[in-house]
Image (tube, rainbow, N blue to C red; front, top):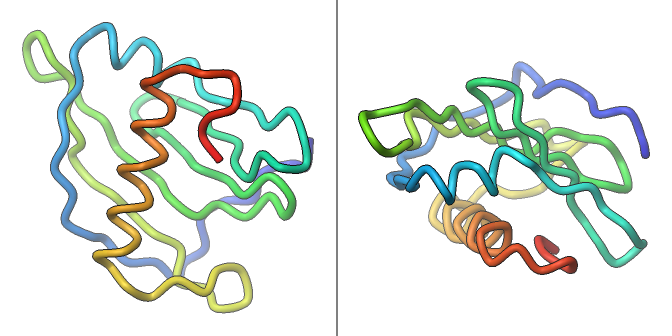
Length: 115
């Protein structure tokens, strides 16, 4: 596994609302390590951040701050890489959709997800 690089200073915060049950949060906090070349993401949780790193380059693309709120956990903040040398995304809505898709893949907890 390539050593993950930190989120660069060129970043933006985007609006993103999501909450998780304790069971869902437990699955998220286990993370995901790419097992093959087709897997595009490493995901790891170090309280309070869920971090999404590209598996081939080690570039950090998303950082999701998760806070406990009673019996659930909720997304408090999402930061996205904006260093054009590391990541080419610039459409906030598309990026929020991709992040949601990646999270959903982790919650389904199949060996192949998230891709």
